[in-house]
Amino acid sequence: MNLLRRKFLKTATFVGAAVTVGAGALVPQRAIGAYMKAAFEAKDVNGALSASLGSDQHSASDAIKLKAPDIAENGAVVPVTVSSTMSNVDAISIVAEANASPLTSTYQLSAACEPYVSTRIKMGKTSNVIAVVKADGKLYSSTKEVKVTIGGCGG
Image (cartoon, rainbow, N blue to C red; front, side, top):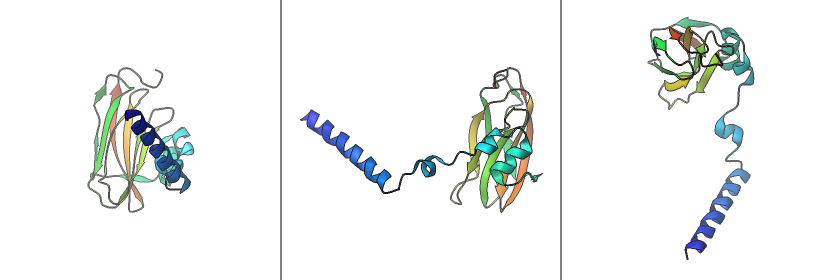
């Protein structure tokens, strides 16, 4: 009886997945997001922001809270949290200015999302970490210097 149940569950799962993919409801690029190659391969902050958010013009804002350690003992795992009190936030990007590829992450948000991101980034050396928030078509930023004692990007 147990073997019949297992076979039924395997078959039902496979058929369900095949129907979902066949109907176009699960398209990999839609499901996991498009990879922004130019943004993540950019060698400077302006290039990364232009490729990911459409502009490199940003102004400092007190409505963005960037939380990161003053000293990161291991650059391979630097905890960073970004939140904002702004309305109509479309995206949040995190940049480590001195990294060979400065864009560490970018998040596209829907109107239903709270503008809050918590992640861990890699940093090669001491650098400014910049949180950039896109709201109402404009870019706003907050910056914090993080001192790295052991580099996490191959250093």
